[in-house]
Length: 413
Image 1 (tube, rainbow, N blue to C red):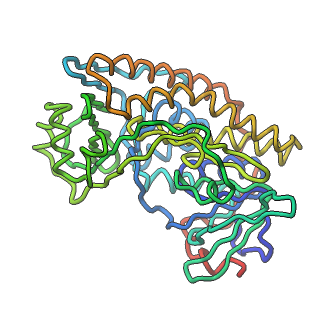
Image 2: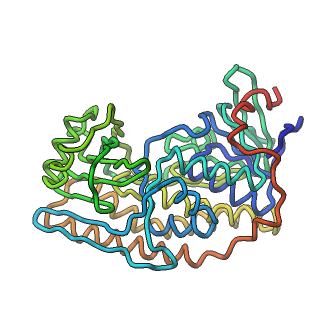
Image 3: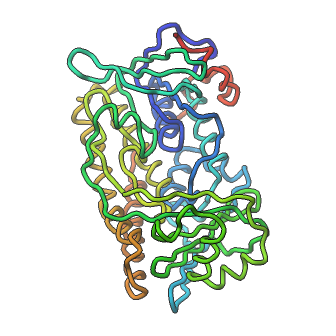
């Protein structure tokens, strides 16, 4: 990142989307010495739909990257216990320390995303909020060579790069413009409505499962608890307090009773459902990361953890191309192959759970499958090679939190 913008916008990698996957990828690439532009049409620190929960693999990566202390310093409560409730069983599980992780965390996205963006800027990435990317540029051979966009003031914006990364969500503009095909589409989708309660007593993560009625409580920042209800889209409808309280009562009368004594949110947010999918996530001059390339139902509460995992997988491949001279095709194909191998079982079992067609007898075994897949993923993450020391890299002249004004003034029109 530079305090005085260049006149010729050419980078090693341009990343479109500055949420968890994009900002984490930018951070890892920048700390390896690559010339990075991270661009997002939104605003710095803006909220977004999220279940917030980080599983062990995500906490492990934030620890490896030296960023977990900032999550903790922001007042994110540690979670050391998870309680599962089924039709006739309550299964509390105390978190055991493993791979150096002794607590889980569920930061608000207004905290997690800025920490990742600031880390990218601190490692040397250039960060710009405001320009909306509408297309990619290609050379005469059809390889992607950059992005085309427009600022909030309607001025043209262009940037060239050796690689363009789409980290712009499951409705990814980059994926659409490069023609990234769907390699898998799941048959199931759940809808979720959620909000933040104050004064709600919880004991760590709470997950409640009944047929077509799942719910949960996730402690997050400022003493609030994210309470969600998940069911088939027809049951959630447009969302709101009525379907949430009804579904919570069906899935856990215990949680419903505590909700009645807590302070409800002024408004709730609703995700109406989206089929899980895996896209082809690389091609000549481009790659996809996060939900842009691999989207799973939010009932898994695993999206953030996989976003951080895949950011490191992609960053490793791109560093091998730009720094070590590896063949782009081989490095990016290996990135997707590794991601898909780690994701296959997660994708399959989450798709079944999201369908809300299981019975009370079936859901415990499905969750055991999910837990086993997550354990395998943690072992894979723990085996990632160590990162290069950050201290040897140059620092930018000012923090990203002051850079949102660069959304238009700092671009070449």
